[in-house]
Length: 67
Image 1 (tube, rainbow, N blue to C red):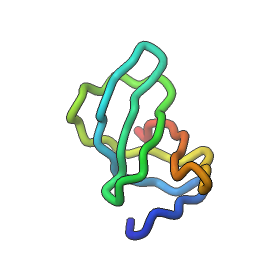
Image 2 (tube, helix red, strand yellow):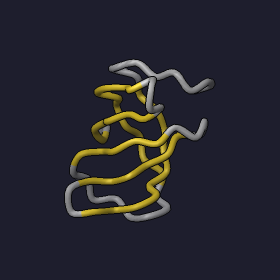
Image 3 (cartoon, helix red, strand yellow):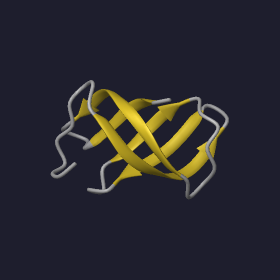
Image 4 (cartoon, rainbow, N blue to C red):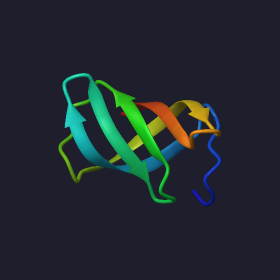
């Protein structure tokens, strides 16, 4: 996906930057950071997520893993 604007429902490939008990901190190819609820991926893994909400003012998103 090009650009930094995301919309709810978009599916994007991201890389896991940090894994915490409550979720994964991820980053898209365009540099937008996000939080994925839950998830069991390891740091450095490439995963596909579905955007739930995008905060344009803070340039970050929340998402869920796509099976």
